[in-house]
Image (cartoon, rainbow, N blue to C red; front, side, top):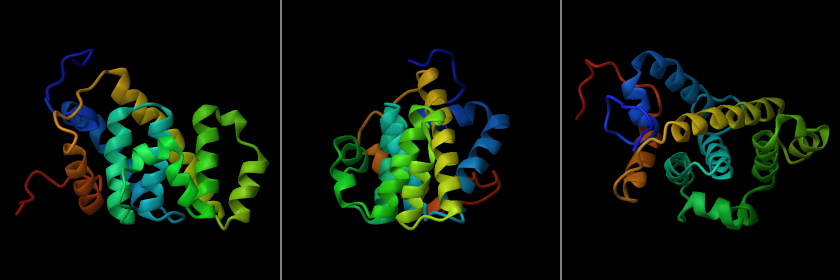
Length: 185
């Protein structure tokens, strides 16, 4: 049960955004820029970073929704959130993404813990300055998104399979809401 009445019965961030359209637009645009229009990361990498930060923050809705999105975009056959939580995903991730996830973990824990060591490790693994920048920004933004979702105790989907549908929608449509006049087929 959410801590405050919301005008939308939808779960997680979706319910919050529908309840507050004036804040929905900039939040959706930020997510779109970070997770679909990044110049330094692929959409799958950005979603994986968002998932990992959400796992670290113990935000069930965001970790499962973005985990399903990351898995869809990357063609990953497992449960991305569970595999990030257990460390299984790290074992098979490429060195660049492992280094960026380590950097994101530092940002999530405390931004003052980010040192040249993490930045140099990301560069040595093949990450450029834009990827490093966008990793830090995604980690910081998802700390905010996770706290927004969990701080108001938003609803979770009734069925775990709903996360697959959410992931498919976000992977194919992104984050910017189509105008109300747009027709869906």
